[in-house]
Every structure is written in structure tokens, then in C-alpha cells.
Image (cartoon, rainbow, N blue to C red; front, side, top):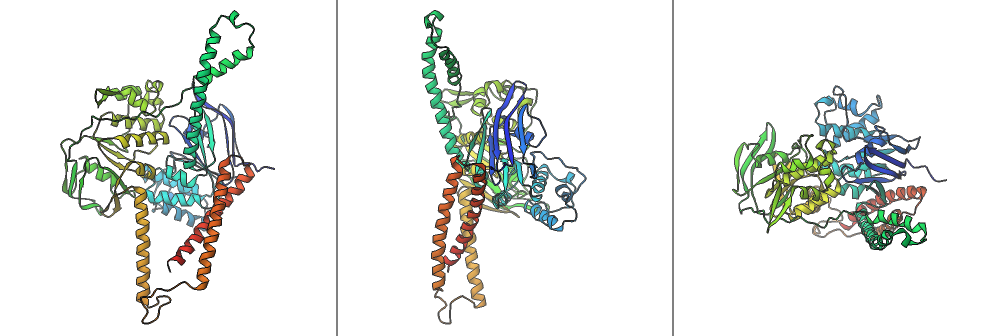
Length: 596
């Protein structure tokens, strides 16, 4: 008998007035599956999670949780009693010292250190982290997470990746962090055009198969259009001219018409402006210093920004990234030194606090109040409506009122207001928060073609790899590292540097203690060789790692095939997690032996 899934959604429909978000959708989450939910802003992601949390009711259909499981839900905007302490808010297992110890460890990883602080004194981001900790430490059987990486810095995100990837955890989550999706999730569910599509693989697999689906759909519509023209001519004849043709042909015509009139989104247009000019002098930081009491942001910092440079800024929360941006824009003054800005520079600033609209305005009016069009050069113009359509606001949405927009759509509209000002230097402070993945891809494309300068502050590693070619890494206490490369290159360099420093320290320790393994007086420069037993162990490890990697690939192919039943999916998901742990353990031992 097939095992009952942890979550089973059957024929779910939800609408608001005439707007149908999804219709008769069905999917399930089996034990051990890590499922990522992807959808464009405004198509029902948050509504679906609200239904799963029991905060709203569907129009029809059913949501069934297996009766013997515990479910933990992280909402996008958690609410707490402002008077209760952090520990009281995130954990209620009184007297269980072991559980409380775990709570403290998780909170420390999420950089919540004052466990007696009232929740009312915490920022919104800190409260979201407490809510995340609360879900993790109660160890539910099924985790449902809404944007778990929001308000986390890179160090916290990487820790959370490891936490969720270990063991046989079962989860369903919404996130725009594509690195996170790729490394954590084994199944992707896409909510699109009122229905769901399931891809049994990680994010990279989803991208490949989604494109195949879109190409097949386009081909189907093209074939339907060709046949439709022939059938339409037949339908337009006088009824007597049709004779006694079978009625099924008329019925088939109307079904064909539905397919032929479908529209696929065409993302082939690229906005390439030839009319953005920026001079050779951009800005120069002349030995600037800034501190808030004992918190040093920068000290005697010098940097000369180059023309057409696309820079990313990395760093943990509180290291001064946003303060640096505000000094550059003249909104905060340095304590010492100065910043000289070129005369031709025109900033476009996308901030974390800039999302303010009149809810009674129409979307199109928000943009035309800035400008009716952008001059692209060469007698080409981009109208306000075209810019909105480029960022996936349909003509109908453009004439809706702002109050009807979802949170992600409002943030996307704010981005359009920045771009409509036609700046030559874009400064984007956490632009990826709350934007859907499709919008992020469009923004990446836009920035790749942008002929001016760009600075991006972001924890989105995938986005940084796509957009920037240079990094400033804020390490805290005024230390800022200048790195010529993207995020992945920086992490690779950092890993090599850490390994090299560890090796140097090991040699130093061996020299100082006189315990250099396998060396005798007069032979200090001769490295120790592997023993016969160690050589045999290395050979065995190489063979075992190879076998495990083959088994891993076989299981991943099976999981992606879409042919497995729930029991097989569960068993193979458990085995896959165990294989990854074995490969890591054996690879680490092989590396230890290889360095002798």
C-alpha cells in the first residue's frame, strides 16, 4: 500500500471576484521531499501558502495533512506579542533544557543574541529571524517556509542551506533565492497560468525542462493557428454549404479555437539604450572615515570608481553597506575625507525604504507622472506603458489601482519608477527582495545591457554572479576588501585562502612542537610518504567515492523521471541524503591523505 503523503492538495481553486488565481490545481509533498514553489508576483503564491496555513479558505478543493504529523509554518510577516522576550516568543517547551539549548544555538546562528530582549524592540528583519528560529527548533515533520532567506545575510543563508539539506527533512518553500533552490530543493512546483507544473529535479533541471515545455507549447499554438485558418474558412460558409458534416467537427473547431487564441509571453525584446551618456569621472572616495560610536564603518577608505563599472557590495548585516551608499548619494556625511562626484553622473536609487505610493493612483499614472517616455537614441523611444509591459505589467494591470497590487508587484512598480528617470548610474540596495524569479531574470537582462554604471547591494548570490564583475566586501570594523570578480569567484578564492592558511598553521605547529610526522634529525626537509596501509585506503576511497557518485546520479535521474510512486520517492530521497553525507565524509578523508 502506498504511503500517504505528508501534504495532499486536490483540485484547489481560489479567486477574488473575477480574478481567478488558480483552478483545480493538485500536488503532493511526500516524506523526505524538499519542494520549491515558483510563481510570478500576483499569481497566487502567498494566497496558496495562506490556504495551507489555514488563514483563508479555498473556493473548492481540499488540503489534507497526514493526521500524525506536526507542521511548522514560517509566514512572510509574523506577528508577536511585543512584551514577551525572544526566548518566550520562539520557544514554549518549558523545563526542557536540551530543547532550550538548541534554541539558543539556532538563535545565535541567526545573530539573535539577547534572548531576554522584548520582541517589540526588534526590527522587522530580526522578528522574521526569530520566527524562522521558532519553526526550526520545534523540529516539525513538515516545514512550510515563505521567503526564509529574506533579512538573512550571506553567512546566515549558507548556514540555513546546510541545516535544511542535512538529514531527511521534508519542506515546501517559496523563495526567490536561486542558489538556495538549486542546493536545497529536489522538486520544483511552478504555479503558472492558473495551474501547476511539477519538475522532479533542482532549479537547474527546472530551467531546462520549463524551456522545453514553453517551446512545445509555442509549437502547439503554431500548429493550432495553421489548422484554425482552414477550419475557420469552413465554419464561415453558409450552413447549407457545410452539408451534413459531422457535428464533432464543429465541436473540435471550438476546442481548436481555444488553443489557437492562447498567447505565450515573448521575452525576446531587449531594452538597449544608446542615449545614456556618462563622463570619464564617476566618483572618488578620498580617504573617508565613518563611525557610529564604537561601530567603525570605514577608516581612511580610498576608491576611484571606473566608467561603466558594475560593482557588487557584500557584507553581513551591520557592517555599513547601506551607510556607504547613503554617503555616496549625499544623504549621510562622512566623519572625515570627502566623496567627489562627476558632473555628468545622474543617480537612480532603489532603496529598501523607498516603497511609497498613493494607493488610489493607477499604475500607469505612477510612471507617467515621472515621464511619458524614455529617449533611447536613434529616434527610438520607450513609452511608460512599454516599460511597464517589459516588466510584465499587462495592459489591464497598468490601468488597475495601486492598492490592487501584491507586495512583489508594488516593489516591481517602484523599480520601474527608478528606471523611468533614465539615470546613468544605478544604485540598487537589496533590489531582489520580494521580486519573483521571472522579474529577476528580466532585471538581470536589463542590467547586462545597461550602458552606464551600477552598484548592487544584495545577498542574492545568483543575481550578483549575473550582474557584477567587481566586489567590495565589508568585513566589519572598518575593513573593506576590494576583489576583482563575482560572488562565486570570491568564494572559491576565500576557500583556497582558508585552506592555505590552515596548512601554514599546521606546518608552523609541527615545527614549534618538534613533532613533524615521519621526520628525523637531518631529514627535516623530506616530506613523510604514505604508508602502504594509507595507499590502500586511498585506492579504496577512490573506488567507493566513484561508486557512490554513480549511485547518486542514478537516483537523481530516477527522481527526475516522474515515474516513481510515493514509496519509491520517499526511499530514494532518504538514500540520496545518506549518499551525499557518505561522499562528503569519504572525500574529506581522501583529501587528508592526499595532503601527506
